[in-house]
Length: 171
Image 1 (cartoon, one colour):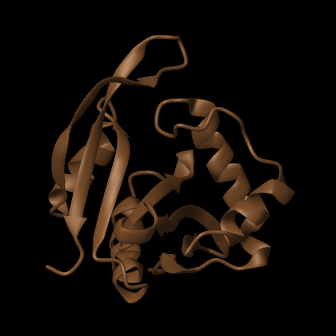
Image 2 (spheres, one colour):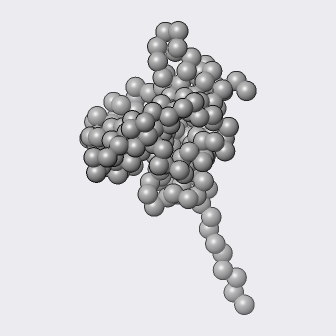
Image 3 (cartoon, one colour):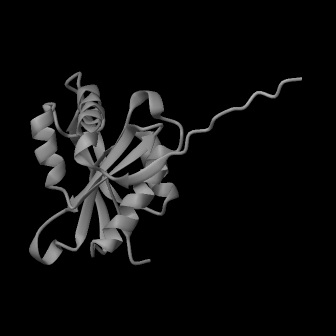
């Protein structure tokens, strides 16, 4: 009897490099085009994306089998006396969702936030209908601060509420 071997790919979370930008751009743009999670309503070309990603405090990528399947950006939420508060956004390729990559990306962003001197990670605009993200954030200890009624314009022109979340990175 011949035994069949199954190759299991390992998901690696690491800092992005220039060679990752084309795949990062495609993933980012797919979330923008979906219109149900990111506030942006225009996509980025590769040059714009390279500049955008380079301006972040940190960009992490989820890599499996040599391909970028998810990413996050981490940057200050504000300046000056509020500069210790970070903000982040996450994107996972449509066909890679459900593998736990989102959790890995959020956890890595929290560690990178601490390493970068941030004390708090705050999300300003989690769309209330994005239950997967909300469940993930709450399972990681994020606290919902409140809701902004009608804060997000959906692709069909209707408005959805947005939820504000934070996590104390020092706890």
